Image 1 (cartoon, helix red, strand yellow):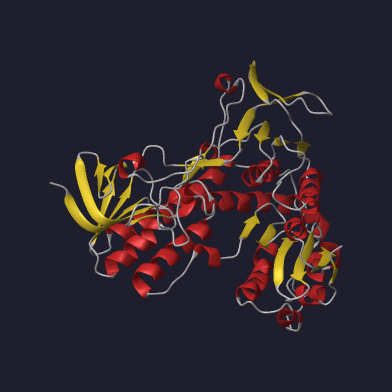
Image 2 (tube, rainbow, N blue to C red):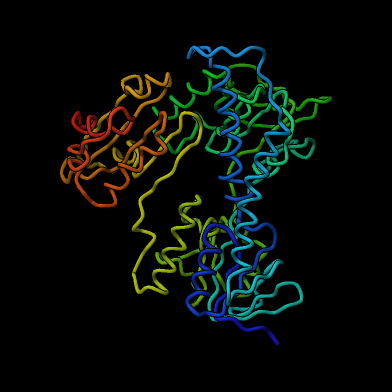
Length: 459
């Protein structure tokens, strides 16, 4: 006989643990299932470890440029990559164990460790145990995709997960993929001391961004000595002795790049293929993402999908917001929806890119009358004082409603500055509210009101 629960949560990424605890505390007999590592991608091989590594890379970068600030440091700068990894591992362990202990210490919540697979719409199997419930919440996340590149089977390659095990300095790291994950690792390892080449099939980096953002990011990375190979058609890999040869067939430059290691950073796929979703009749799209409505319900009554596996967001903050939406609707009588949230994310190169709402290109495509303002970071006092003036800030506003439509902020501290704009957008307030606000000097954020006083028609 199956063990019966009121609710079963599958997966312990950013949505699952909080939801499981909330359901248990609400008096529902709840089970949570984790097949591998508690905390999901963010805790184990995503946000937390990568930003910890980026912090080490940032420290190395600052030390190398210390003399520019009048700080004299004798001797050459070297990296202890084992120490870098140990520090990262300690931060990850703290978060990973914290999630596990939290779940296992919650009353009315049973933790199962193993792989869950649906038998039907109301039962899942974990090893030899059968569990049934009236409600299921799928939070299984995603993983790095492996493209069918010619010669890939001949070489050893890394992805964002296996990079977490690296405790040495690659001589020459070739990053295949010029988007968010790839660029963060590219700058990180260049600052550690590796030679780095980024290979991108498209005509520009981070293609979902505006062209001026892509161009500025390219310049920032090239200024640190990272080689960028765009329009790399017919990418193929080959082992050449102890080297890896990546044939890029670019319009300019050598057609083959030789490196010591290859990192594949070409997107992600959902962890949905082995859950037995077909046994429960749960619909997925052509890419394997679970289809959900505006309140994260699947096509099967009582089954929800949250986080990266539903294709409605690919970030820690969107996954956590999924939890908030489901909990509000089920437990608080508060009708929250996915469509209520505003697109927001960051690219954590240094300086970072903070993004909210529509891009300039999207606004132009919409055909609406709009205003735009743009300021280079060379005209931001705080950036100039710190000697970090790369990038720019750009905001687009609806000319008729005065609503802020979107912002692209590429510069020092812009991953934090973007929230001052995002909050005004959520408040549905006109841009004049923040334009007339008195911000603190000297900060980066103080220039936002100034910029909004310099809006011009988007032509």
